[in-house]
Image 1 (spheres, chains in turn blue, red):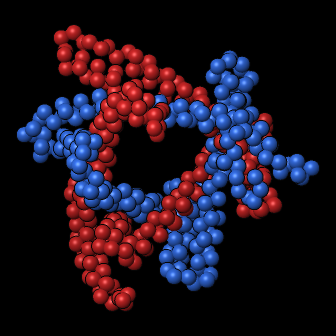
Image 2 (cartoon, one colour):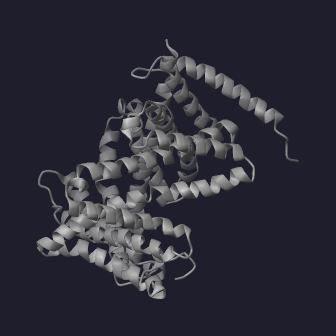
Image 3 (cartoon, chains in turn brown, green):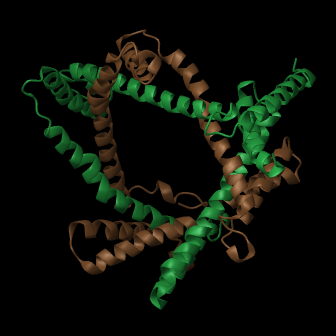
Length: 218
Length: 240
């Protein structure tokens, strides 16, 4: 019995059933299946939310081991674990004892630590992206020149310093977005859609099994 | 100004500068801020997800006995995620994963076919080649009608197929189109990053609507951080 439960066919069948449960109501009007499909979608959200501790356990394993064995820079792992524990505990949805999303410590950490850290992490990329642009935007051939010209026009057209004296840059930018950018994105989107459909059909048929790997048996 | 007013501002300035200190080089301030960020982000995810589960139970699933059973069943299936940490019960983790992957694929099949494929073909087919009284728009429409299939064919045919027959010319048009399109996308990415950088700079300088106290905190913390970074660099043992 145990061997049968372990067989790879069971998750493949579950995948196929779940997929068909979503696809069928889109093409056929069967109220029962439509209802089951809606419940399945809500279920998926609950199930995905239940996975939250997978990351916590993984982080605990990695950093816990680092702290226990006093490896290089283990002090930072302590900082990470303390930050995680304080944020998670103060945000627990138990309002009766003062915890939850309205807890002052949770709010302090969210507004004054997490938000500035998040936006600064993204903004620091401005320096690296500029350095990458300097290296990439060299007109060595027509293709590279096109990247350089269209990128420069887009950047300049959003800077009042240039558009005040060169207002036609805005028209040029609009044309770049309306024609070559639309053509590129449409082509990319349709190509990606075909790929996604092919992958979905392969998974539905049980040909694609990559997501089921791991655990020592395939 | 009370401590409770200043503390949040100083904390935000400290963490902003600690991240920017990476521009000087890898250093303890940055590593500290990086680990705090990782910790609070995971803690936030835990709190947010548990809040979602609680809200779903209170506002929806606890309304009837049948719904409650379905909710508990979903939670039980969710618990199977943790079977991945045990080799013996790893197969149970696959069941939960199969539900999520299957539902995701099903939802993608419903939407991708229409929004990313059929709707795009319809939008492309509806473009009028000639617009009376607007020759520039006509040229743009003709170019778009030529460029889109070229890009699609370029992605379709790879390797040697691109170098023979008419594909040689199609590939050239597609490459030029893609480069111009990606250049614009790159330019826009640069702009969004700079927009964030300007936002953080305005916060550090205390420009309205940001609190003006941030300016003093910025000068003080920046000087202390810079001095400590130079000291750290000087005291750090050199690898010969």
